[in-house]
Length: 40
Image (cartoon, rainbow, N blue to C red; front, side, top):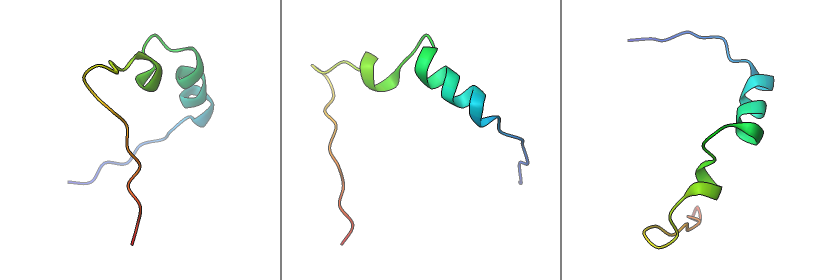
């Protein structure tokens, strides 16, 4: 299956900055931890 869609980058940025859910800011630090994976 192929999906073709237009993406409004300005809307994505607006949702990132002012949206109701902010993934990194709203995450539960007592349950999850963020780690960077390095390429070899």
